Length: 192
Image (cartoon, rainbow, N blue to C red; front, side, top):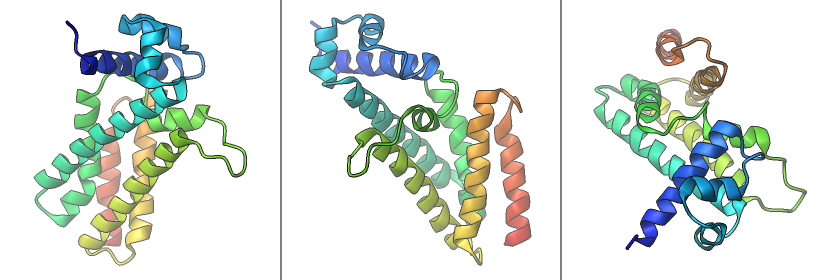
């Protein structure tokens, strides 16, 4: 007998694979259900709606990303290395994560229309949460590393980080992480 958690994980795995390979808007719940090997009614029982399914996929993805980033920061030997650990985390996360064209959060932000004034959107709130989290962590790490303007340092590193994620979509440069890490080192040397 299959456990409920296994079914839910299969649904999330299938949704993640299809949403970020084929696109969120064009992927119907019927395709996700078929890829997960469940009936559509079972998918709705576990997810509630396509939006809730997308939110759950992003939440799981964010939780996994944080595990990788925390491990990279913990392995770093100096405050400067902890600041650069975001690039180490991208490498380990990409190696462990299921295949996607690029960042699931950027993909969602690019496909999702902004809600009408006053309306909440739990999916876009997760995208904003991811952005805040990356920014705030970089600011804290820049402060710890003794940078005179931690917010400016974090903004520059965020730009490089976003460049890595966009390069993964474009396919050029083919291996953007080492290039971004080296650019970040140069930046830190110039500002630190």
